Length: 216
Image 1: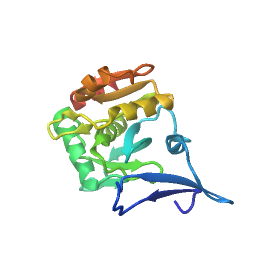
Image 2: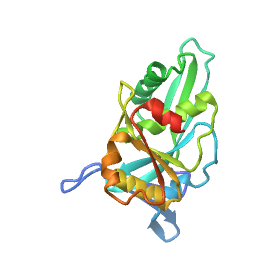
Image 3: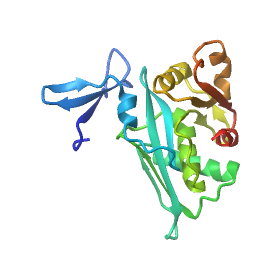
Image 4: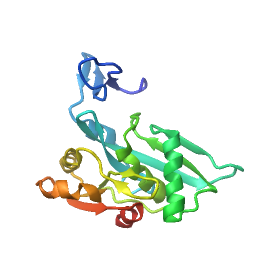
């Protein structure tokens, strides 16, 4: 953001490693200074217990990051409802809204939907699908989601919540940031059950979108 003090450095080509790594920096008088706690930076100023606001656990390369996804769903005044996505793929948004309509029964065809990832980060991994769905559902029903919850999970066309990679890293980041509940795919349960990652945080496992929304 050129109007803020923070910059994000991302490699677009790396012959000897991954291009998924991301480095946040702060612009100061003495130059660019590394931000040691990007999750705290991106969640700073977040409004508590607001409908349409959800925290998701993303993985940028090897670095877990907590991000806020916001959604605003309002009745449309146009013949065709508008869909606007900032920070996520537009086609992914329309697909997830179709899942909500077909599998959960939410009548979204007469509503405009605006989805934004706070902080200028772009989410490309499908592990944030469940967070996007939760933010849309929360705004549609005008029900706030508890600010102590982190959500993760890939969503399929049949409404199932699929496992995510390196779930233990994401849960550890949520614990470090003081979150008390985490909604995960049921497919990650066996791996996390063998580990002590969940000590100090309540892990809620969901196999379907409906089950995950029931927790929320």
